[in-house]
Length: 196
Ligand SMILES: [Zn+2]
Image (cartoon, rainbow, N blue to C red; front, side, top):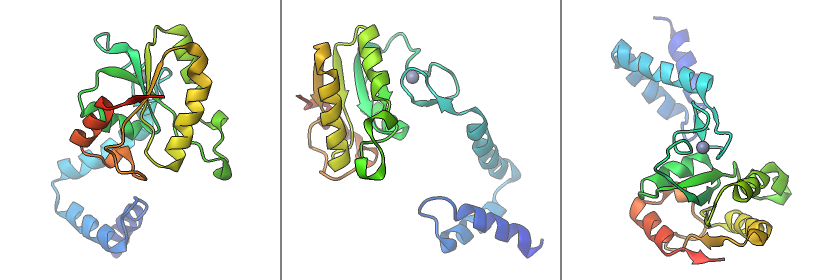
């Protein structure tokens, strides 16, 4: 084995968030000890997601089928839409047992960084509310400044539709990210949602 291939893997792994050179080195040498099947499994999973992953045309979740599994599941409550910032937030809320549907904004407002309302999937949300029999929109944007601003903005936009608009409660630490909340805290926050 030449130093080149291990060095290549270390350099590649440092591109992952939170992986510095030391961690990358540890991972690379661990991968060396893995069975060929396990190691190739990781490599193929990465290739697969880059080949097949796309956004659901209804809710903008990441999916390999369009519409996604959640949107095409007839047992889900289509009258309730939970609005989140990122596809990864859906995984967190699914763990609470929520049985409604979702709408992913693909970000949160941040005008100073150029993230204006037209950059988010807000018009698409309004269209869904208009065409489907939606009864409630649950705003589950993150409990930080950007998430709060986004929730306020969406409330203004969808108020004319005369549906129930709720915001998840703050059992969640302010300034945090719902992705990292445990399911008990998140379930409580969902339960205690208040009307906007
Ligand atoms: Zn979907």
